[in-house]
Length: 157
Image: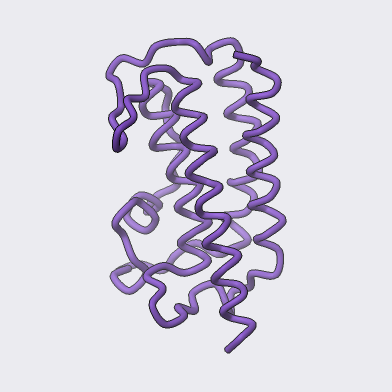
C-alpha cells in the first residue's frame, strides 16, 4: 500500500469537507429541509465522530471525543432527539482540521497493521488500520455529498 497516496487521499477528502463547510453558519447549521433527518451541523460532527469511533477506537488508540459528541453525532442519532445544546460550528471545524494530522501522526507506518477484532460493515470485513482509514474516507465522501445537497436545498427555500 502506498502510504503517501493513502494519506493524501484522506487529507483531500477532509479538505473538500472543510471547503464545502464554508458558508455554514449558526443560523443555517440546524435547518432541516423536508425529508432530511440530519442537519449540516450533524453531518460535520458525524464525520468527526466516525473517524474517532471507527479508526482510533478499532485501532486500539484513544479517541479524542469531546463530551457529548457520541450522544449527538453517532450513527442513529438525530438533531430532533438532542437533549443538550450541540457545539458551535466554530468548535467542530477546527476538530475536523486537526484530526487529519492526528491520523497521520498516529498511523504512519501502521496501515498494514492488523486490528484486534475485525470490523464487519455490510459485506466488508475490515481487518487492518489501512482498511479502517479507507472506509472512513469513503464514508466521509458520502457525507460530503449530503452536505452539498443540504446546502443546495437551503438556497432553494
